[in-house]
Image (cartoon, rainbow, N blue to C red; front, side):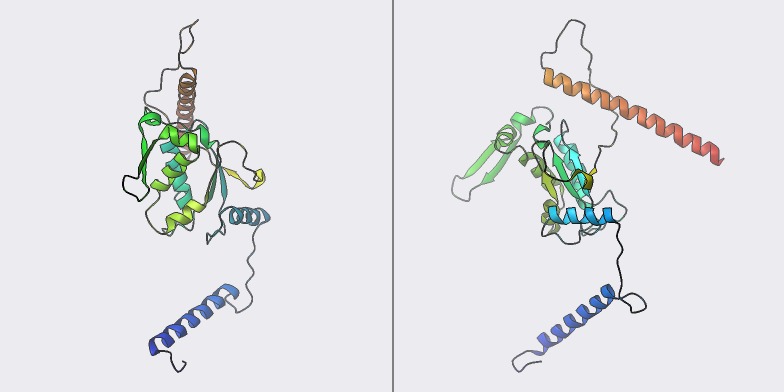
Length: 250
């Protein structure tokens, strides 16, 4: 304690120094008092290094994966909900509410996401310049023209919890409008969409000799119907496997 230092500040400084010493002993020593050695596999170390290089100014990236997501043809809302879960780490058994267990997510083909209904023309984004009459309103189509990745990033940001950790989670998100991302493919873990079976699949049939009026919309309906059929077959295989396991146990 110095001459001009208050007793409260001196006690606070002492508590901080003690806590730092305890943390140093816990991290650098094992149970016997020897130097602790943390052993990591080469792939885990490489993935952690890649995550640290992508997400800067983000603490607690040890053990985080770098997950690659292809956004081509995906619905913005459904894709954003999956990305928000991955950034928070809710799809991992090591989930914690502080958000430190989330993975780094790399999204490609973000410029080819889809909006349902008339949202591309009618959905509006507002911001204010701070001056009188400075309200700026743009549609989703205009935002796609300005920045193809902005709509998806904004959707993910609004699905994250409103807390101080949201900015750290957003630093883990890297969005690219095309297929090129400039990252090492061996360090990326692909994040596939879960199977989704529709109760009423869209009509993807067309009479013989006829051509669709909107080929792009028809192609999306065909892809959605195919994914629904694949999901139904996947669920059927899972049910059969579960029944077989139940019979073996009995």
